[in-house]
Amino acid sequence: MSKRMIGLVLSLIGSVAIGVLAAQKFFALFDKTVPAGSMTDLVRTGTHAAYISSGVVFGVVIFGWTVLAAWLSRFFGPTASVPSTK
Image 1: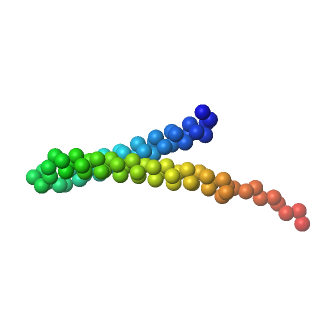
Image 2: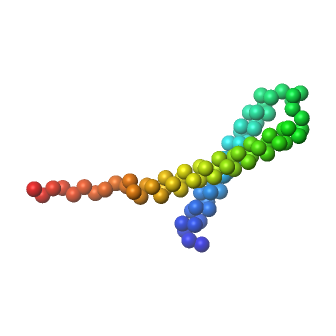
Image 3: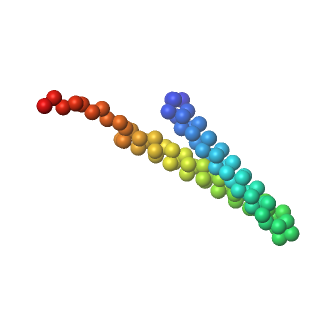
């Protein structure tokens, strides 16, 4: 496996981990604010699954933005300015 592929895989894993951690945090906030009497275990489980799924999608979006920014960065790099001799 090339270094580029290893970097992409590690970036994908890290991005999805960030998305899942964000989803866990938001589910904990949801769980604290919604009264227990208005929610069944089925709703809680379904909501948790929806938050985790959204977190995975969010992680893939983060990965896409990262790869796009890295790819575009080579077009906007610093250029060496040559002093004029005239």
